[in-house]
Picture: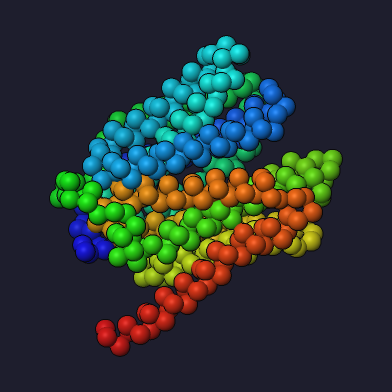
Amino acid sequence: MPPLTAAPPAATATRRDLAVFLTAKAVSDIGYALDFICLSVFVWERTRSAAATGLVSVALYAGAITGGRLGHRFGDRWDRLRVMVGADLVRLLALLTLTLLPGRQQGWWLYVAVFLVGTGRSVFEATLSAATPVLAGPATQTVNSVLAGLRGIAFMTGMGLATVAVPLLGYRGVFALDAASYGLSALVLLLLRPTLREAAATTGPDAERVPSWPLLAAAGLAPLVLLRALDAFGSSSQHVGLPMLGSELRPDAPTAVSGAVWSCWAAGLLIAGFVLRPLARRIVERSPRLVFCLATMVMSVGFIGVFWLSGWWPRLACAVLAGLGDALSEITFKQAMQRLPDARRGRAFGFSQITVNAGFMAGLLATSVVLQPDRVPEWVLLLHGVPFLLSAWTAATAGRAARLAEPAR
């Protein structure tokens, strides 16, 4: 089994180039946030069909699973720069086509566009995660946390923009704006041409002979991937449950509840990425698996509190707590996976995209079939309670193993 710490890359991006790239990535994330909100609303306003609107999420996560499969199959061998530029261009063309098509053709192409957006995002994110140690070098943990913080900014900005952009620009204008954000990302990558793979990384056929699950199990990462998938399954509960909670708390304006909760969650991402993670830098570097388990527990407690506590401020405080845990779990998950050698990281991150997105889609389907409005808190407790308990058990066993290994050092 190869060592978990890869050889240092020959060259890393300059601080200026990293700043330019991360800014462009944040702009494309804002475009994705606009997609996430506006595409579903667009379908609902056109069809007034819950089934047609639900198919938007199905198409998005089916695309994400497809992107994960591509990463799992080819991620250790493909040219990362070309693939990331290609993922941006695919999303640009899909949304630009949606912008230009006549109204009748827009209806069927929208699902194709959503599928391609999901595929492109999955490929881009998995490839970037695998390439970050090469791109950032010693600043890998910092870049991971900045990406998490920028995701919070992007969601907050995108949600705010959605309420303003549609009345001002119309849906065609919003789709064109989304397409332009991906075009900017591709252009920046082409101009900077950063090094995204170690020169000494082996990408031959031997890499394909090791199945992903045994590779992750041998590296001690399989429990983290399983936890990530179970957490994604549980997260479906609040995605479906929040609109129901909003109808109960604010029948006159149910979307205000979802908007407030998700905005506070995004604020938690921002705080974790730019404030909390730097304060916990040493423990994240030393024990990413342990911090991942604790962060997953915090996220689960936060979302459970949103549905179980009464009063606006306790609910919103729990939403911030959920965002803090979400960001820290993402950062530490990447940190642990990035310790794999460069020649193995691509397929490992592709495999994680498959499991996480499949878990979320399975959760959405189960929640849509089972959940009743009067059972939302119990359902959220059940679906988040499972990853909470498994995270607690994994953290306890990891801590015990670390204590037993201490004398040997």
